Every structure is written in structure tokens, then in C-alpha cells.
Length: 417
Image (cartoon, rainbow, N blue to C red):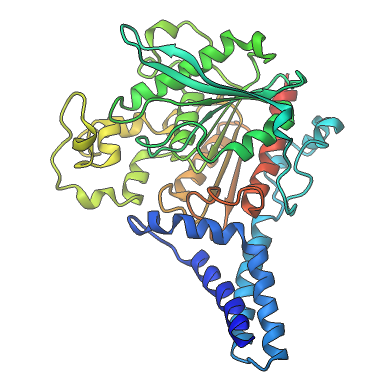
């Protein structure tokens, strides 16, 4: 029994310590999964720590009592902070913001931030169209694909979410740790377009944003087929996908980011949701410690192979060089450079320990949006790192709390005139 007591108290403390540790590249990538698990399991780890305290007293394993108390305290504090209410919606949309949401919409949402399970519908109640082509690259057989998630019963809300996966701009694909979220949003009647955009080194930032805008144009052209109002489209993404969503939403008709054949297309959207997406590329470059390797040669002009890409930094290939080589590209590719009063309402969510996306830059973007008069909400979770939503999504406190905000943000965008 003393072994069990030690395990309960010790595991609670170790996972609590893991939450507190602030990592940087390259260690951050190694700790991403365990830190995400620690946050997701925080209420259960707190219970384990308390169990260790009680059993330590009963079985006279007194060394386990302080260990369990500290572990339970750390994980309980994390759970409490991640699920606490904030005034973001009131500040962004006014004191009567909740009155804009209909009672039948509330019934489908996450009821409370401290829910122990993310709502979802049975798989039989949704329709999933896989590998739908939304654009073919001219003179090639290469098609850009997406998955379309929607209610099978036809009871659609009229709002569409176009989602862009996390990738670091060079890895990943659609249907990447997102099914729990999509099922939940479809349960609310929304349609989800999950996009597989091209990555480095096949394209650079221009090509990626162009793919995002082609997805917007395609959804607007096919809106009636899916029961979507073309004026009620929200861009959403995580990490690099969040960056692309912000950049495309804030600069819908920028000539450098808009393919010629859709220059005259309405590419505006009614909202953007960024889950730890970089907002200032120069700040992110230094935050990721890519400047440590600034003695590497400049990126060659033209297409770069995957092997060659490994010899350079991710942003070097994405933006065509280091900040000292192409400073104008780091500014152009930063969402914060494109803030204006007509930017779509924005929901920003990330952790304050993010080792990839600097939280200070996200807060600066939020402040700039507010100054411009754009409704914007910035949610920052303490002791939370990049990729906090990668594991145990249906029971993760920060994930459930984030979906609580996403639900209400989507409802407000659906009901806006």
C-alpha cells in the first residue's frame, strides 16, 4: 500500500511540476505531449494527490502527505484558472451580448467551463464528405482537398467554419487531432470545411494564403449547396493554421496574397478564431530561437527541396530568408501589420507558456484590434503551452473552456446582421 500511496502523491506532484516548467526549442517539442496530458488530466491529478494525502495518513506513509498536498494544490490551481470566467465577451460585444444568443442555441453549447466532458453527437448524426476537391492547380493533376462536416439531418445553422490545421507551415494534414471539435460544432448545426493547404517547400507564404483564399471563394460559391450563408463564414486554425486564418481574414484583398483569378471575388469573412497562431513573425522568429542559427547561408531563390529545407529555419523558407535578409516579408506576413477598423471580430486563445507563439505578441495584437474598434477577445491560460489541445480533448479543462468561448463566439457571428 505504501508503494501505491507514493505513486499517487508522486505522480500528482511530477505532473504539476511539468505544467510549471517553461520550455524552449528544441526541448519544447519533446515536452509537448506530456505537458498537454498534464493539463488535460489536471482535475484527476488533483484527486490523486488528495488520495495520496489521505492514504498516507491512514497507512502512516507520512512522506507522501506533503508531496500529495503540493501536487494536488498545483494541479487544482491550474484547473481552477483554466476554467474561470472572464470579461472578454462583455468588453468586446457589450453588456447585453448574451441576449443575442437564442435559448435553443444555448442548449447545444458547452453549458459550463467546468464540464467534465465535451459534448458531441453520435457519428450517425453527421455527414462527412472526405477529399472534396476545391481547386486544381493549372496544367497539373494536383488537387487541393478538404473534408466537409455537416449535420446529416439537414438542420444546418447557416454558418460555416473553414478550418486550417497546425503545421509549422511544413508538416501535417487535415483531420489532424480535430474530430472532437468538429463533432461538437456540427452538433450545433454548423458546417465545417477542413482544408489541406499546401506546405513548405512546395509553396511559400504567398501560396499558403492563396490556398486559404481559394477555400473561402469555393465555400462562398458552394454555400447554397451546403445550406450556408456566404456572409457567415468564420476562419479558424491552430498554430500555423491560426496564423494563416488571421492573415487571410485581415487582408482579404491584399494583392500580394490574392491569386489573380479571384481578385474580384468577395473574400471577406465575419470572424476569425486563432488557437495559438503567431501574430508577429519577427517576434516569433526570436521566440523560437531561430536566430541562434543566423550563421547559416541565405535561402536560395526558387523551389527548395525538403532535404534542403532542413538546412534552414522554417521561417527562412516560408518567408524567403532571415529577418536581416527580407525584413519586409516578416512585416508583410505578420497579422498585426494588417489591423484596421474593418477587421473581422476575433477570438484569440493560447497559453502563457507557449514556446512557439509568443503570448506578448498575441496580447499586442489584441490591444491593437481594440484600439481600432474591432471586437476582439484574448484568452490566456496560465501554465499552458503550445499544443495544449492535442490529447484527451474530450476531458481536457482548457479544451472544454476554449470550446465554451468558441461556442458563444460562433453564435454571435451567426446572429449578427
